[in-house]
Length: 199
Length: 162
Ligand SMILES: Nc1ncnc2c1ncn2[C@@H]1O[C@H](COP(=O)(O)OP(=O)(O)O)[C@@H](O)[C@H]1O
Ligand SMILES: [Mg+2]
Image 1: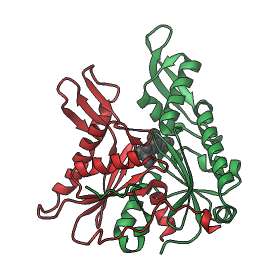
Image 2: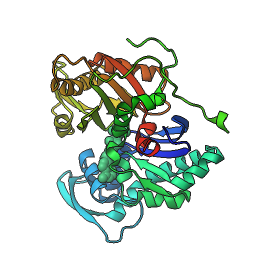
Image 3: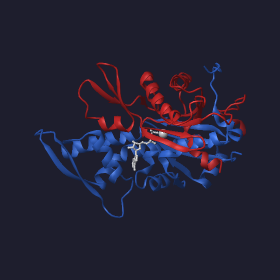
Image 4: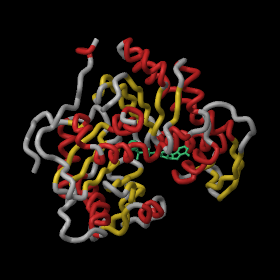
């Protein structure tokens, strides 16, 4: 059977971050915000443009984020060379970007995600909040792989945080669990309001 | 306390998900699409990107191949993501992408196995119209039946159903 008690899930994907409190197979409070992995790429593009006068593409920005992106200072500094076009001269150039640069670029988006988590915490019924304090916030989605994001969210919310194993496949693994145990888990299927018979 | 819990889901009656059919689970993400086949595990994990020739309307590539083209296409080719902000933004292209993935999975099985029943994750707070669009796209892409699950619920499944 589905475990009783509340859980908070923060799923940071490409287009949206989903923050939800679930209990007994249903969603209690939830918020979806349009700040997630894509926006972080945009943050890096803007930062490189403003600080280095250089134009980079989205793929490059995503590579930087994955290679050296972090939410709090790292034990050892990381850096990588990146290529793009000089905004002034128009010619190609190469610069070195480091983890501190990227942290600064990502800070606004990460701040917005954390503030939204706090809002959801405030809206969570006290019994469920006490479950969440005990079990910790569950981080999922590709965006949760930003270095130290778990630490940062834990510090800011004062709630323990754990990143789910292999966060990029968590949702599809969950659909698999439901399919394999449908007799037990039928209750988690979402019903349509109009109840129109399926095609 | 309990009545403050608004359950979005409820029991669906009927003999769903029998054991003969090949049931599949899909994470239709804005960035990546993953497919789980019951009894087999995750079989597809590719970017949600489709490359289309705008002159002919022809689909040139889907998934990993299409993502390689992003930012490198000539004017008449667009490599784009059919989902935006968690919901379907281009219905036709989403449907084609889903068809490609569902057929890829289905082709590998014996042809007498009925078309799959599909369970798809949706973000919380999507409208009824957006939910209906997901169901219709999955059915038009070749599923026999389509069911929805809230994505955060799916993501937490290992924790709440150990
Ligand atoms: N190691 C990583 N560090 C930071 N971000 C990552 C990492 N791996 C993937 N991502 C980001 O995760 C996002 C995709 O996550 P995913 O959960 O698949 O999204 P969606 O559910 O929207 O398809 C992309 O923005 C990608 O850049
Ligand atoms: Mg997702």
